[in-house]
Image (cartoon, helix red, strand yellow):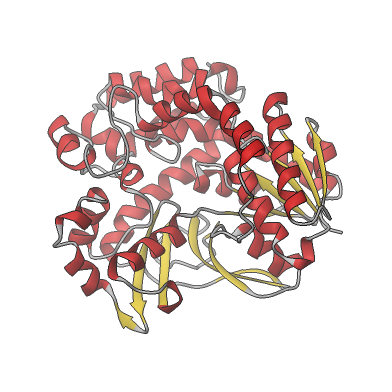
Length: 438
């Protein structure tokens, strides 16, 4: 009987999906699902949800819930993490303070100045979780879903012995989106995708072995499809390779789209799926979810039928390949760049194809990114390396200088403005950043 620990189980969307996916594998039908969260109401509700899913699958799995991380981790074979450090009352400032300086953040969970401060709060927490895994379940496979993915994985993989990788659904999600656009069955699509998390590119994208990029270009001549993802479609049309993450995210990762009100109106307001109003999308979404999540879960528990079909998340397939029936599984994961992408910094965190099997997780050598993409991604990777180290060493100056190099921030702010902005963010975050002198 395998044991899976869900740390931050109150992330009810991910937990329900991943529990369902695990139980579709015969190797895990009688597993233990250990749910851990520090919020008692969220833990109560997600436990009820998971019990409903287990019941739908024949009630063979065992469900436990706890607010103690040690209890959840002890003896675990697999760990899934969806935690973050700091609730709405602190991370709202990741978006609001930069806005005062003209840095128009939209989502704020991965990079630019908002992603950097989210990383500074989360890296110590993730290292604490890894320390507990080393102590209570040293052989466990740790799959992380918390953002900012690259910076967290860089810190964990370079400073602990835990078998950890980071997972995101943007690679397989975008591949499916493009297949739908050109009318291709997904089982006839192949691709090679590489870069860093949320800034990876399809180096090739083929339908039955033939280059499908001309079909995508043709499809984007239709305003209906161009307007679905304006930022990403602009990047593809000008850079020649399609990026993985949504337009709302990508708009804040570079210097091209969010540096002037007219550009935000043209590229970001009508075709990103994200609202760039007074509060950025993620703030609006969180405010709305805080009002409705309890009633939504209660309604789901009382009325809705459990979907027993496996979804598109990678986690359950990886666990099955490693500790289940050992069916090999290829996915895009976040790992240290040990010569995997030749023209990105050695030991930065990259997102590349990985093969999971009974022998473990084997990242695949990709080679070089196209030179112009390497320029863009190199900037991101080097900034993330600086921040991952600074979060541990407490080097406040290094954090400021990392923000100075951020493409969006540097497109709209002077050096002194960046200094003032980072100082203001450090002050707001002082209770969450004990490694720094504030």
